[in-house]
Image (cartoon, rainbow, N blue to C red; front, side):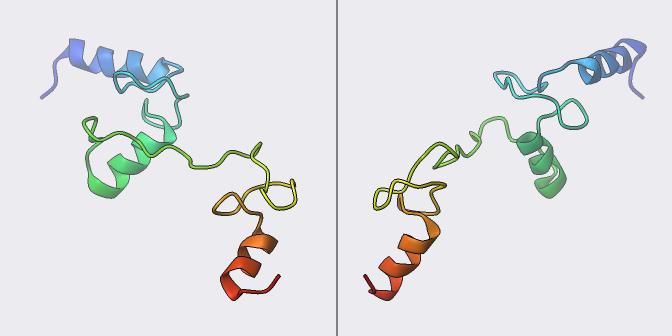
Length: 90
């Protein structure tokens, strides 16, 4: 049975605006956790603070190296140029 102090600590952590995992500054999504940490909790049953979160490879600001348009799909190419590179068409 949790003590009163432990319950209060959980409630105060839930009121926080940032993730309760040490070193994570992402906004709270649910249960005092950010979206990636909450997803880990739901899928594997543990937040696994020892394993770093995956960083997005590309951002919405990245542009295709062939045409200069965005967003990037894969290998710094837009979807159209990525598909062309896979089929060998120019």
